[in-house]
Amino acid sequence: MSLINSILGDNFFIKILLIPSILGFDFLVKNTIQRQRSHLNKDTKLEWFIFTILFTTCGLTLKILFVKLDILSPTTHTYLLNDGALYFTSLFIYYMISEYYRYKEYSVLLLLLIYYFVYIHIWGLNFRSSFLIILSLLLFWYLTCIIIRKRAIIMEKYYLYFSLSIGVTVIVEIICLSEFSFSYIYLVAVFMKSIFLLVLSKIVIKLLEIVTEEFSKLKKHSYIDMLTGVSNIRKFYEDLELILDGKEFIPFSLALFDIDSFKSINDNYGHSIGDDVLNKICRIIENILSEDNIQAQLFRYGGDEFYILFRKKTNKNINELLEQIRLEVVDYNFKYKEIEFKVSISIGVYEISEKIKFRDILTKVDEKLYCAKVNGKNKICY
Image 1 (cartoon, rainbow, N blue to C red):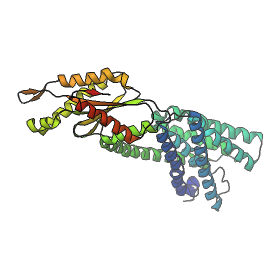
Image 2: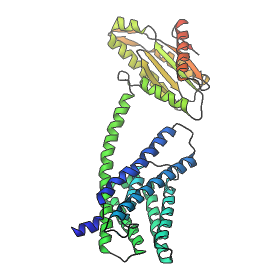
Image 3: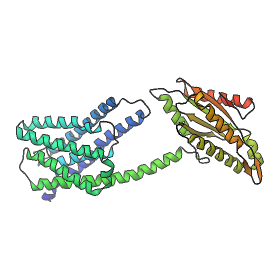
């Protein structure tokens, strides 16, 4: 039992619980910031500065809590060095699971610099100690850069986790050699704790990937209109809000169309044929919008009404495209048993050249559709 205690160290399981609590907070805040800024014009240096301060704060908090736990323990005398395996391994894990951002590999340098000066403050300054501590921290940074660049490969291979554990063992042992004599027990303790934490993180990450994948599927389905397979009104509202909330506004156009006399199609041929008409028109339009450099998306508003959102396009850029859509729909031969029939659509288009209220945009484009209807249907009104 004493050997196990020597290998695990004091408060081992409490520290294991602290790691996801502290670094998980950093991970959640950082991802929230990235999501909020994903549609804005990013200031890369400001983002890096914020993330560096956040990571350094969480890293220091984790180390301070480790130290506090060790100071309270009657059997621990080397609290600065104790559980270096858990600390450095947890930082490796953080870099494996967090998304890349520019200059990410330099974010850890501030934390390492603080670590070095605290070490010097507590243990004193001499050439041997300084050399070994700097060597260990540089080795840690080198392995961190490898993790960032080879993240996907490392997360797939268990033997690379083993290699990282050896790296952590070497780092912590070099730190210990700066003040203490070599110890096989401590060497085994460092390696065992490191490999345990890395393998545990591998299992947890795999489980999280499964949960995330299922959540992504559910979220994707919540954005899809089940009848036509195009994006639904919820997705439209979210995308339009993102455009309007963007830091740099770029003019765009919005089209609203519906099927002329759609009720008579349902009355004459049945609702299933009406559904077929909706689906076929969606496929015609999606095929046209899939052409190169057309930044547009089709959304079903409800019934036989649809929006087409043209990003970074003004009315003069989409005239020919909308005319192509109108003609291809009206030229298509729809069938009911042996009967062929024609369908047309009316389109209202509104160009948003400056930021206006969300509801005002919908009102304006609806007015344009009404204009197309009262002018004889099968028209485009700008």
